[in-house]
Length: 319
Image (cartoon, rainbow, N blue to C red; front, side, top):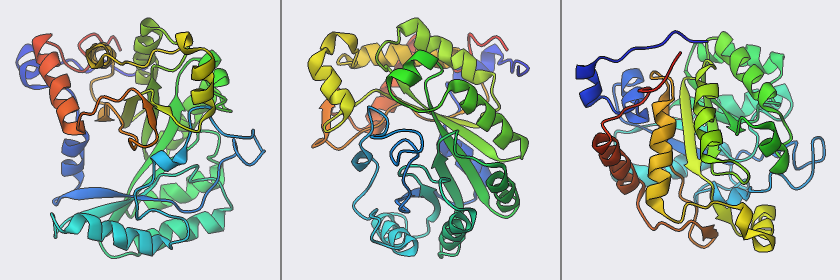
């Protein structure tokens, strides 16, 4: 259990939450942008080693920008990503974001080759590696610990939920205990460690979701990504919704989601960096909820509501 980080009244007036942009500014003297990669990995929940078909909500088309395709090499994807962003910020630097599927799932030498290839690309100043908590062998973790000594490195684990019944229902293929273990092992190596969760998974109540913040706060997390459950075409979850829509809460009312997020953030350890509150899937794939709001508009509304409620990250945290 972490020691509580108290926030005095004066600080609380300006402190709403720890945002990712400020976090990056502390690490880099220049503007930094992540470039998503599809490095050709698969997933143990798809290839049969853990299961078939993947998680019930998953359609990886929602992850990939136009430049992000497996037939393109890692340097090509990175250079095309740089061209996409450079028109606005020509002096920007970049983090190679291994995002699609499970990016630590493979032979060690092949993994090392891909990571080093990304770092050798001009303008790349670090790595963000998204993966599953059941795909972090000790030998890979040892290599990442060495890599961490010479570059910016953030390892993100897809935790999704802290409830075992939910993880089973969405066919996640791992337990929360495995997620907690992977996070602890990674942080113990001195590597910045993140988690990703989905708010509103079927079967989870408001209280279930808010209690998740307390459970995650006990882990040595550096960053946290959260977003609303999105129903995506072509997924098993979309089929389940067609059969029984009553078992889903899809936050059609955006204000309901805002208040849930704030209730969650109040319980969250104050030093955890919140990378995002929402995700926006491509309109052509999205069934619901379709808020039709830009991310910055959503963030502004969350901040406005936090000020109205006179609250901030960790206000109700009891560490």
